[in-house]
Image (cartoon, rainbow, N blue to C red; front, side, top):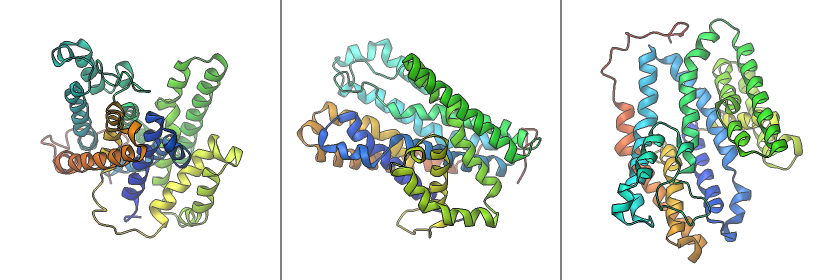
Length: 352
């Protein structure tokens, strides 16, 4: 399954999050239909499924642990640091504080430090920035990046255990343990009504089940039965996932249906050859859309015209994503590490 539609799927998922947040952040009733058509939660879960597949393949194809980690760092961290720095620098333009007070404030530098360490939850805001918006965080979407980085660190251990335990048994156990943790946290949240349990449900132990579904596909993708199942189940899975069929729209069944839908579109549909299809701007769309929408809300654009706010959010985010891809992401992806890739080896690493 060398040729696929993953870039197109990720592009759709990033746009889904953008459209969903356009309503959630602006609370403009004219955009309420976006909340029905798109789901940020399902999009993020689908991203984690894709990550499970691609990151596991990346590790198994790497010649060493160093090579694997350098590829992961170059893919995610340069653009991540740039968006954090730009928000801190340009935040002064929309802050209620004067420039001197803004740059003297310890909060500005706490934002830079905590976010650079993927601890977005510890300091999500900048001084005087977006204080009058419904949601005060500068870039609420970045919470998923700490989960993604946790996957990077966990994959070598999973690969090691993969050499000791049958992959089907290993992945099934990790999937079920993750699901048990997730539903335990939701139960505590629903019974005790404390936000900490909802927060904990969205951390890596609770999100790991989606990652494991993607990783499992690496084991089965070459089997004819798996490919045939995708062909038959893809469209029914999509219908069952998004229509209100009760149990099919939630729970463990939803994660399986979502995985079937993702890989059906990635592998079983004809590959769509659209312009620049090999350019992956989905990451840029994801990390830039939130502060763009927040800024337009602060400037009153969404209050004057919901449609104009949505169009400008899309246009400005696409421009920033293109600049991010061509100026930052793509050059770093192509850059090779000066370190000796044979100097570090992880036991159980399957060299392919």
